[in-house]
Image (cartoon, rainbow, N blue to C red):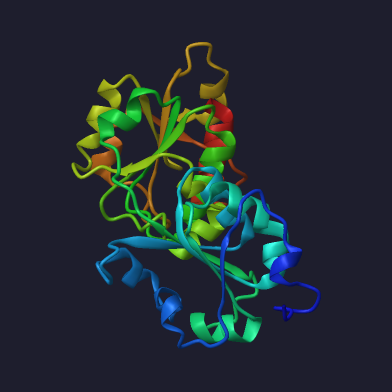
Length: 289
């Protein structure tokens, strides 16, 4: 069998069960039409009979996706990535799911950009839980109001996964950006596929429901009356913190802050008015969870 790339053939990759490997040698092959110049806005809508989907990019993101039991419908990758990912794909892909193999030049032509990470996986979105369901067993929550920066969204999911205790969750206001946007997923290293989240349609009234569920809602604001360090050292500090963060610049709305049980600040040196929202969220999680 001809080599797919230097030193790699289909027979050279040993996996626990056979993969549905499909070599692709041209960008207009109809079998990879779902990957052809697709943008995130198209994926989120009804652009095909398969319905709303998302795209995971990069080996670490795809690995997190599969280990989090978010099955991939299909995978497009460089043959060299098959050497490192073959066993993982065989263990976690649904039986028969196509694994398309393409050279770097063909992959770049399919995707429309130079994709140096060498792997894409197409997944289907899932129904989001209700607010009451997601709060039931959560140990901590990040509550995000109108967060529209995809880098920040991904960074906060990563912080929640790392610092949010055994069962962190993320709750979004309706005007927040999409956690499954390709860049958000990449920055989160796939943890937006692992940390449960939902969108609170009743905003900011959802904060009242979060309080009623036994959480302490802690608005993070430079004007907060409580020093976060003091709150973290208080023996009576909240057992189930819900850390409420606003968008860069404007911060939390007055209406949202008025519904929170605490207003906390992070002590900073003079001349610095605020921190990036990801840094602030990570510090708050580390201090309170």
